[in-house]
Image 1 (cartoon, rainbow, N blue to C red):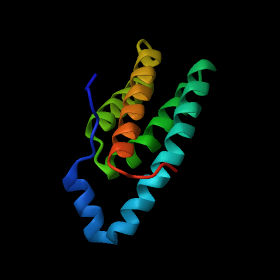
Image 2 (cartoon, rainbow, N blue to C red; image 1 turned 135 degrees about the horizontal axis):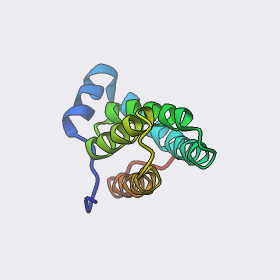
Image 3 (cartoon, one colour; image 1 turned 90 degrees about the vertical axis):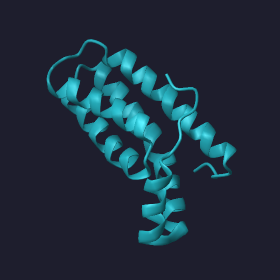
Length: 118
């Protein structure tokens, strides 16, 4: 696991050019609000053996993560989504735990950079 998860500056710059700094702030705020909910949905789906629901939660998280440029997280989410859709369930619990840790690191990184919590 990486020691610090960062957002890709090029992705953030593209968002700034498209919608301005306010939009970037709004997207980060929305990400901070929605990500814990998606992680909880994935955890519940996994516990219930509803792997399609798990994959769907990962898909939504992958989209928002990719938009912000959190490449380490995006790669892991894509891997988890693919495994669930291909009925390869071994390692999903450990992967989800790793994902939660990476998200915590990202939120800590945002806090250090002065991006307010949701």
